[in-house]
Image (cartoon, rainbow, N blue to C red):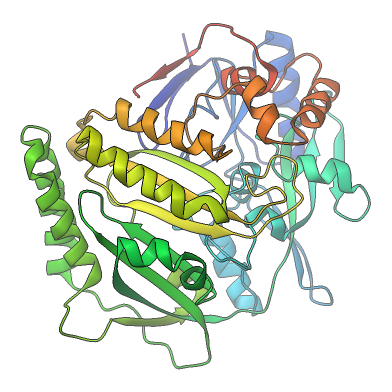
Amino acid sequence: MPQHHFTNWSRTYSCDASHFINAHNEDDVTKAIELARSIRKPLRVVGSGHSPSDIVCTDGVLLSLDHMKSVVKVDKSSNTITVMAGIKLWMLNEVLHKLGWALPNLGSIAEQSIAGAISTCTHGTGVSLGNLSTAVVGLTLINANGTIQTITKNDNPSLFSAAACSLGALGVITRVTLKCPNSFRLKAYQLPIKFNEMVESFDQLAASADHVRFHWFPLTEDCVMWKAGKTAEAIQPAKSNWWNDKLRGYYLYEAALYASAFLPSITPVLNRGHFALAAGPTNQPPSVIIDDSYRVFAMECLFRQYVSEWAIDRKDAPAALKQLKALILEKKWMVHAPVEVRFVQKDDIMLSPAYRRDTCYIGIIMYKPYERTIPHAEYWTGFENIMKSFGGRPHWAKAFQLGPSELSKIYPRFTDFVDLVRKMDPEGIFANDYIKRHILGSKNPASVTSKL
């Protein structure tokens, strides 16, 4: 009988692993790899389970590094810190804050482990800022034969380029070394703007602050622009408003979303209401938050959800957004969640969606109110077709359909990565269905359950 049933946070994928292991040290990791080899089933590392894909799933060995969360070394001369791979981002943020440091950029949530976050190029937003993997200067992994390898950006740049976003295909990352800036405060606020203003002044708006994010509310002309920039002003934390944040913004909103499953025609009204809640009163100045960076980055993700996010060349984003808007209206899709637009600076990491091009990430969501799935397959296909037409690269942590033949056309070093995977893991110790489907090209039957 399976020892462990795993379901991701979104409850979109699940699997039954024959073995579940809580590693406390690198010896435990080595033993887990030996076990996977002996039973001839894949080993995958599980963190917080926030990835809405089957990247973690296996019918073999599921390995948790949750107990491997300590700080290994702090080097104040170089502003670098080495941590065990299982530390969650929220824990790391607190450790760094006490040191007077911070991560240079973060996404909307901080529940992921550091190893999981860098393995999929988790990102925040900022035209002059890279994804989280670009803060990494070194890491340690245990490969398929149990050898411990320390890989640094300076000593082995090519291998490091692969390991900094490895999808768990090269081995188990056990330690991560990051270069961190000094801690900083951010001043953040939101502004309502119209869709046409967003796309017509796209580059100017994207560069108008250190961090800029757009949310466009489909079936309306309305957008919210979130901006955050460094400041030395006194802390002014977010004000808690139970009526807006919880009653209207969560409980009543979820009930309304559930109702829209039976009455889709109310969706435009819902979107206008969601926009009004996000934008705030039109007769008042925007609400300002000033706080330590990691507190400002955090955002409430509301309910379980289906997510698709793709990265395209920033210069193509306005045209792609216009096409998406036109397609939603043409097909009369009742899209009830905002389209998110974020920015990442180019880098040289092999499988980074921002590899050698300044990037705009466009993400779509459909919520699951009270666990109810609202039809979205046509919307997903239409969105992905638009992204593919612009040479889009899918977010590795989120579900997508591309295989090696398509991925090799949009990632210039994809073949180099595949060759490295075959060299470092010839027996496929780390090759679950996700790796076989997207990286190696295998068409073996799935050992996971999908609720897409």
